[in-house]
Image (tube, rainbow, N blue to C red; front, top):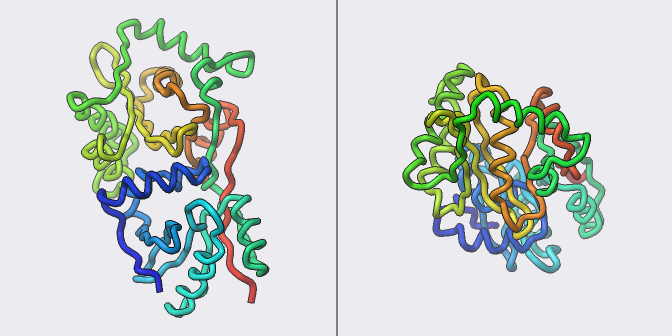
Length: 295
């Protein structure tokens, strides 16, 4: 049986190293995300045969196992997942599978599975070039939004998040929740933002702040998934400032020097958010699946 544990800050170097070499663009294989969302999703980890095994727990038992993370042949780790589930008296479910992982799982085990696409959990992937340059006719509207912002608020400036301005980033987030009538005490995301800011350096976070007349009006931050893909985990803005989301997005991406791709995560099944993400013309939409072995 796996010896699962809750990930700690001390685990971050190992998790980061193994995830960054895994070769996926998925935001769930991001060391910082695994840590800051550990409580909301009851994420537990263990190491088996050189692979990192993640599982989501409910009532003391795994309700979903992730595809083993690591280099080489994961067959032994996958077989151990089936043994672990049997010993716990549960039916093994594999969750957050990409299409490639779904197909590989079937090939390795030789089993037949029933898979269901997880609508709302797709990651939207963009090129750094598109988001930073906004080239061509397809980004004409985005460039117009930014131009209008520049004309309307000439006294804007952008700063990277640092020790001194972290409170400004939290202030924007808190105002966003207030404006959207979401109690802070009821938002797991708010606590994740607070933790990401308080452990900013330890989590290797990178973020930005947009100001108008010295007032913080937008914040964003994230961390790298691997050496070519950056994950934008949080983005909050005060919508009374017309064009503010387009502006913070563009200014922040310009700072992601060296990255080829940007993952702006899922739409959570919210139609307006899906529309917004599609309007930036993703080069890939990373679908997710949940699967159970057929009896």
